[in-house]
Image 1 (cartoon, rainbow, N blue to C red):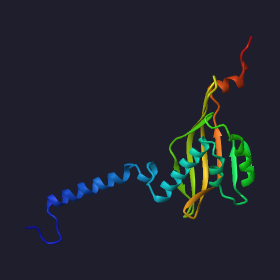
Image 2: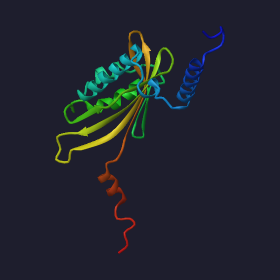
Image 3: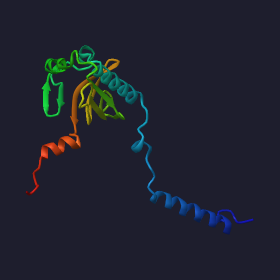
Image 4: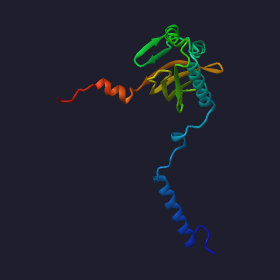
Length: 183
């Protein structure tokens, strides 16, 4: 039997192997669960649900529901493809443009990423596709949105939204014309 405090040869070998394995594991990059898959916190889940409801209201051209989801704070803003609207009334005026146009367009939301900004605010980032329907030249545009949401009682309110879309390759070629071609 080995003396107390001293390890036998087999124990020392196992200790060395365990030490080498632990050292190697610290050098190998391990995927962080939070970096690749955010945990489904109640805050994140409720914000994602809010965004889905907002997109559904847009697809129905339901301006009253959409505007009920916006904060009435003086600093509320909406930005879409270079146009800035400041204030709830201005945003409502812009939103009125879709009244009666249900079915002529569709927003299809992608993965909704939610980043907490403290206890009462979140940043939402999501890709979406905007489709113009019912025309011979139906168009689908890849786009993205960001929202800053504020917790208000038991729901969220939009403090800021930003939408942008990419030109399709066809539109991009039309804008470039024949520049660069030599006759």
